[in-house]
Length: 287
Image 1 (tube, rainbow, N blue to C red):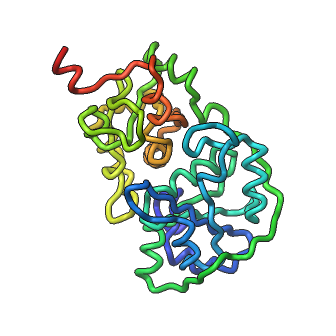
Image 2 (cartoon, helix red, strand yellow):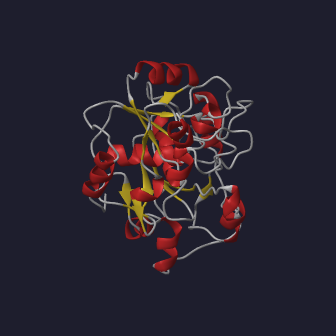
C-alpha cells in the first residue's frame, strides 16, 4: 500500500480511507497487568474515527482456560461479524503502544483466512503525533457477514508442541524478555515455572520495533539470524500468552519466511504443567 512492507499502512493512507466503506478500522489495544492501562477504557476516551474495539480477551474460544485462546472459526466469525467486520474488507489494526498487541489481532484475522489485513505503522501514537482527528465513546457497529476460512497449521496446540520439542522438528522462537527466558526472572502469572523449552531460541519482542514501529526487513532479518534462526527451516513462535509471539510471525512474514506457526498456549500453558520439560540458566549452572 503506502509502505514497502505489505503488512503495514501509514497514517496518511488511513486518513485518506477513513470514509471507505470497504475498510474496517480495528483498535486492538491490550496491555499486561503491570502496565496499568485499560485498552477498552482508552478506546472509549479517544480512538481513530470509525474504529471498533477488538478485545482479545473476548474474541476467544469459550471455556479454554488460557489467556486469549484463538477462537474456533464459527465463534470468530460471529464476533467479527457483530463488530461490522467483513472478511472481504481491508482490515487496519492498531494499538495504543504503536506496536504491541496489534500483531496478535492481525494474526487472528490471518489465521481465519483474511488476506487484506494490515497494521497501522506506529499505531495510535503516530496518529496522535500527526494531529489527525479522533473521536470518543463507542463507534456504531453494523453487523455483517464474516466467513472464516482457517489457514491450515497456523496454530500449534499442546500435543503438537510436545512432539516438536521431543523430535526437534522445528525451531522454537520465544519473544519473552531474556530474563524470563533464562529462568532468572519470575513469570508474571502465578504458579508458572521459569525457563524455556529445550532447544528454544530467544528473540525478545522489543528487538523487533523502534519507536513503536516495526523495523525494516533487513533489520528484522539480522535480528532473526543473530538469534540463531535458520530462515530455511520451519519455526514455531511462542511467548508468555501468545500475544508477542504474533509479532515474531509478523517479522518472519516480513522477511519472506512462510513455514511457521504460533503456539497459542505459549508459556502460560507450558510453564503451568508439571510434566513439560523446562530448561533454565540456574539449572544449567547447577548441572
